Image: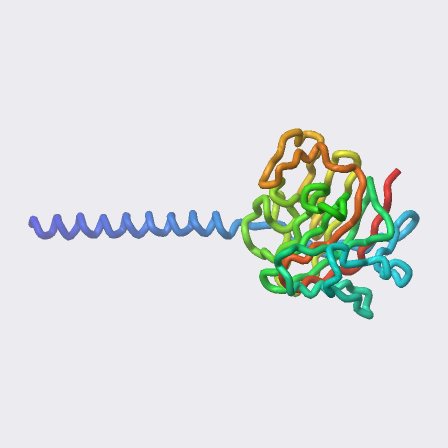
Length: 239
């Protein structure tokens, strides 16, 4: 009789352990495999006011603004290809013909595995890191969003979702910068809407209060290791 009780007790423990284990793994699955939005590359904007920065007329203004090293090429299909062979010192491919203040920007990019780049806005050529701000470009498909994710204002704001497509697929940014307001739409979803004038003290790893950043500067693309391709770079200055 005593052995029977022990057998029943052990059976109950095993059944209980099984259900606890199942619930635990279901909980883990829910955390790491929550449904996320499904995006799509947005349409290339056209019409009055939009400037094609990769047109035959404008592509000559793209330069390595850091040094004389050969870090990119203009391909015949209208694509700007960054070779990604250098990590440090960081280098920048910039549209050197003019600066921009308030604007709407559309561009598309694709990356190789573990590639790292960035879209630098209102940047000063002599100090892009501290006199301008970066919308991160990073191969991080499927990872939880954080302040260094693709689409983040680097090390400052965390995207609402990670909208990255897998390596080798094109992604789109539609970025609006007006006054102190910055909005980032990635693959059709608004993921960042923030106000730089609220950032009166340094945030993240840079000793810069973003409220003090210049209100006008250059458009730069960062070379931070790994191949990156950019296409359909269109900008519309706002009055």
